[in-house]
Length: 87
Image (cartoon, rainbow, N blue to C red; front, side):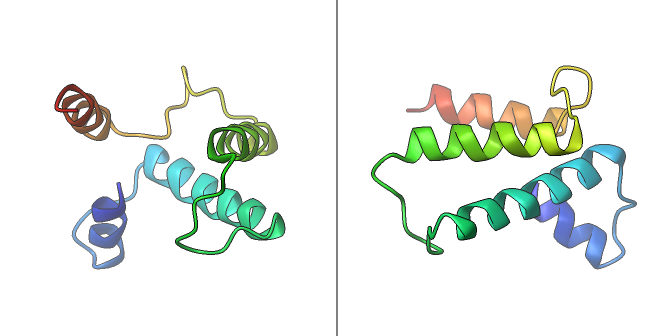
């Protein structure tokens, strides 16, 4: 998804609704991490809890239902599945 955003920035792609949702969601999530004092590149001991809380609150901020308004393209979801299978 980051590659897509860079390609959009460089004029190589037109942004889709999915791209816009992903971008705004990630920016808001980053704000939440910073408000909690989580520094860039640092993984907190309670990562799963912090991620779940920030992710869920951000979805609620924008009233996003991930089932009907995905944050990730089908290609990104497939790449994730393949990466998980390789673990």
